[in-house]
Image (tube, rainbow, N blue to C red; front, side, top):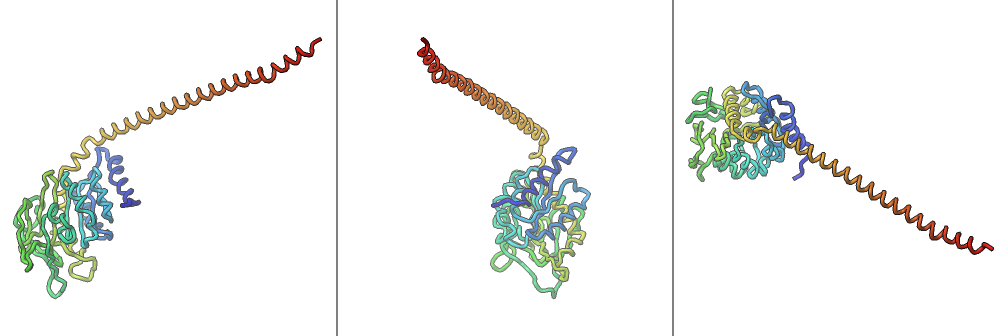
Length: 328
């Protein structure tokens, strides 16, 4: 896959800026992605930046290749994925799972929790096992999901036990009749849906201590005239707390600390190695120039000797012979 200017900008922003600018070492980066249209991603990033707990960099990206790059960079601490289409998640099965298993943090919203869109991500990273889409298209009734608390963690801090958030529906693991089926696993359900009993917020930790938060019940649109407008959701204090708590809980996973440990020392070693290679190269170049000079001198001396020999044999010798022959 070709990597263009945006990918190059991502590398510069994520690696160079935090390392060069930060006085106390590299700063962690939270990456936010909502497909090719960054409107919702920008709004979600704004919620993170406004939180007093935030002390790092925010990067909003607009392509799967940029997300893939983010999983490889040492300063990436957490990746937030909001998706309303399967095309936005192309290739994420093979890139997000290694990041998660190596201790990275992830927050998956909407289609990231839906198997037909996300594939094995909905099992291995955001384990909702969502195979059924419950969507209400009619605005005749108030379109909300009622969150009922069933567990506690840092994610639920400051939130009521029960609250509602605007949403068209949710994704869940269901039988052929659409009834929720609980799939066994080591994840923790924090909020369940009052209507279906399915998880609306669940957390999961990988063997490598990676952390993920799945939020399958966040389904909003970008049209302001409708009841499920994303701006209405993001203005809700309960959603703000739920989302930011989720991001900072996931971001507390160990990848950033372990990968960037003593990164300045490693950079210094790399710089010393580069300087040594440069000096060795300059020395080799000087030796090469001297060798070429010696070769030229030898050729020049041989040339002079050849010229002298030619002068003696072809010019001076005949003249002397002729001079001897003409004497009386």
